[in-house]
Image 1 (cartoon, one colour):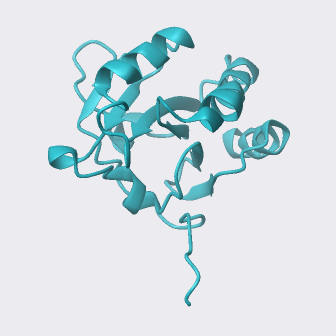
Image 2 (image 1 turned 90 degrees about the horizontal axis):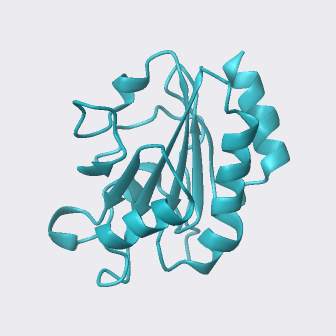
Amino acid sequence: MPSISYGIEGESAPEFGVDTWFNLPAGKSRVELADYADQCIYLYCFQSWCPGCHSHGFPTLLRMMELFAEEPKLTFLTVQTVFEGFGTNTLDAAQEVARKYELDIPVGHDAGPESRGSVLMPRYRTGGTPWTIVIDRDRRVRFNGFQADVEMLAEGVRMLCR
């Protein structure tokens, strides 16, 4: 049986393909890579009902946001990548999660066209949630994985933001 290869670390970052966003700057209706020229991107993927997202993923995201609060070359984004539980992992649920964690960053809701599943997930070959993606200023994916350790990520992001 062939093994499944997750992530696209080292490859060019594709557009996210997410159509529904909130917490955007005035005048914006969606997020595209070009919006963050000369910045690194920390993208956290979650589902509102995912226990690991709440026990590990969000605490990691919040800690990274705290560590890099004054770093102008790093942008934080998060997307609810829905691949199951379509009736539970709704836009309303994503908005409630953003309120719970007091997120003031752009938050996407990606259930895909006609609720057929996330568009972002196959583009980045994610393996579920919680999932973290770090993109450098040259639009190369530098981290794309499930096990996101704060200390390891912080060290890598510091190097990328120099």
